[in-house]
Image (cartoon, rainbow, N blue to C red; front, side, top):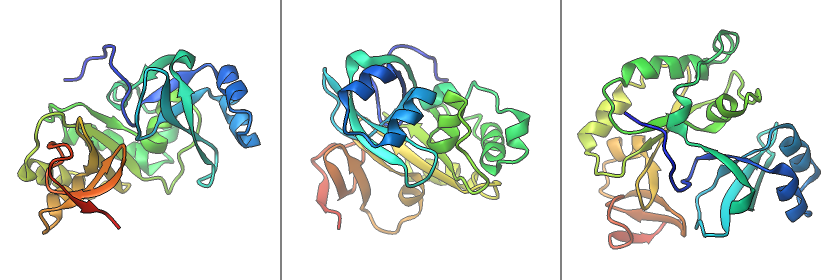
Length: 221
């Protein structure tokens, strides 16, 4: 079971930030970025290299076309919310009644009670649970993040995927290892030994998501 404790930021974490400082530091940002950050001062950690000074982040707007990639200085961060922490947050009935992805999350909590890896919602569902900003809609997928720092077998992945069937929303599940991210569905179902691995440096085809750069095969097209 996941317990909240201090940790280095990882891809998909939500950061509550000092919006004024980030806005001042990124004067070239689109106008909607300032409006969104003043209303809800949260950014999501993007895949990339985190340094002692800066974190790669994305700002989420109201529309699907409103996504802005930038960097946030470490000193601007006020708090960190990891997806597993969001499992403790109750989905308001008013939202579960109208948003299929929220209903799907409640069902998945029951189906995955035996999963001992940290996991939780990302995407619009995670953002809404973290911030209270109503960004999910009836067409939203249920984005899920699983943190598998130790090796997962294909059979384990297939078992998890099988329990996402017939949910009220499409479940898009990303597994994060200590070195890269990948699709749970692709890992469980592909006939190829190689899958698409998402590294801080870019996309690669590889056969071992836990093996670092050693087993990378080729640049993905």
